Length: 88
View 1 (spheres, rainbow, N blue to C red):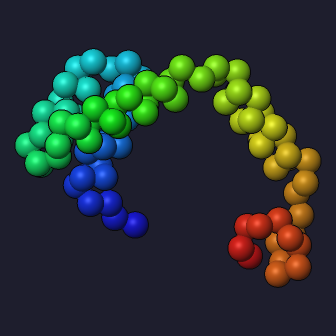
View 2 (view 1 turned 120 degrees about the vertical axis):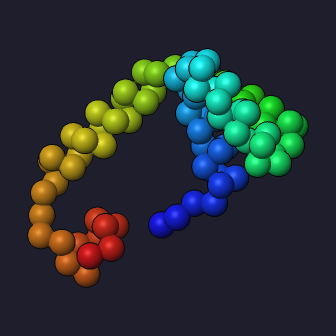
């Protein structure tokens, strides 16, 4: 799978905001502007990332624990009929 430069730039901006990595954010925004992305689009991505960052981390922790616990509880041979959704 390959991503275009625009998608990479926006992902880097989002990740920098999520991590509160200001130096990385500066570089990512500078590169995005050099690629021709509009300031409005960059601001929208930053605002979305900040909004997501405001969500309680406990929800992420709970879901992660649940998903990892489920995968340990239900080991099985994958087949076309197993219904686990893995695609095997």
